Image (cartoon, rainbow, N blue to C red; front, side):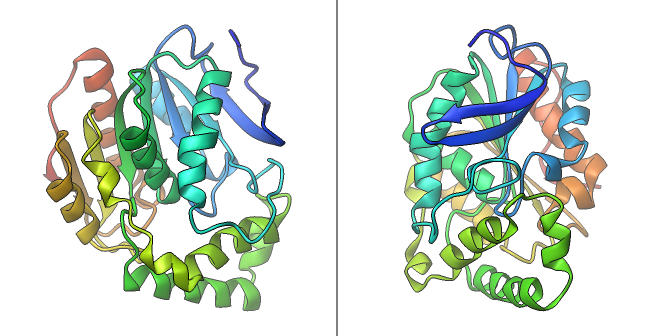
Length: 273
């Protein structure tokens, strides 16, 4: 594929995956590929993709995984290794389908874990770096507790109605994610072994008040990775710093991307102001 419409669907295997393309084509210049969270989709990124494109000058490609947004539903229950399947089976086909030639993977939550699995499991010289927003490398008690609580909220509050505005099959999206994380077998899920095989710079952006994970996730990356790791902890932000601390997150991710793609800017480390 040499060009993409600004929005549409890709046929990947048996699924139709909705997407947005900001910029002319991944075949023409560097592209930032955005991978959404466990309840995310194209629309739930808000204006972050547009602002990222404006800040970096790079193209931005964002898509909804099967079961989310306007993409095809998936058969439930999802297997507990669903992120490995997304990273090692689906994502390579998506990148090939859009004509991806050079750029970064930028993931949030589940999407960050998928990006890490891909970077550590697929030798792809096209990927020059990974920016991980609130990634999971292991399952923590706080993750399971918060995911159990959101199930109660989904079934007893207006949360289901709110999510239904973004997902054409909201139960498929929610239970596909929630049931997998609450499966007792999922407690053994651990992708830290992939980190040692990542050979490109890594950025981790995490809210200090992340209700789905602790700073142990950063500690694991710093212990396991041989690649450069830049960690930014944003005070006052929770699990979605690109929404809760939008300016600080956008600035950090844009500077990281620009530095890798164009050799510009200074490294950003440590605490956000």
